[in-house]
Image (cartoon, rainbow, N blue to C red):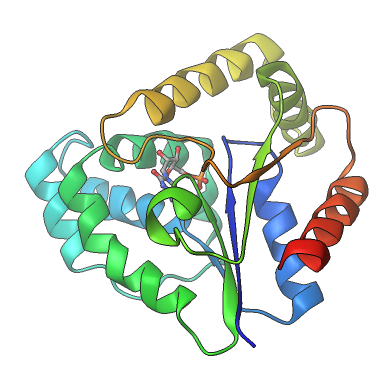
Length: 208
Ligand code: C5P
């Protein structure tokens, strides 16, 4: 039987890592929907437009081709920022809706992660998880990752960036970041990924 798992949450909450692990555990395809918005932003910039050029963003969303999820350039912090600008344009969201619904409608089911999966894309998902953590815990994770890669960043700057992205994602008029009423909330502030995974599997096995 098809199993659809919808995972939402703010930047750096651990939802992407969790989504990958759940997909592997249940043998389901996984779609990181943030990559779609990142790819739209990149196309806008690559064409020489400003990231807040709405017409350019709508056009780019309408002709979005296949995305290589190993493409590291899509995963930069700057592209995440740019993605949150194009993601606030309703027509961009509308252009990406069907692709996401089709993915979720595969015979096996699927795992999708993003900001509006449980609320807009898959309102009838079998399981909805809202993965969150304090801004401080998320900034701390990003800081350790950046330091691990040898980048010189400050914790304060990362905290500011996370807060700015949260308020843009939560404050927009269309599909704001919001836990669905029937989502189960996992606060990962004090948890490692293994514990988050165990909690999530228990929820899926109980309610899925
Ligand atoms: O999750 P990720 O950091 O890759 O997402 C980048 C941006 O794309 C988010 O900050 C958000 O503005 C947007 N996004 C969205 N809806 C989704 C996934 C991502 O608006 N389902």
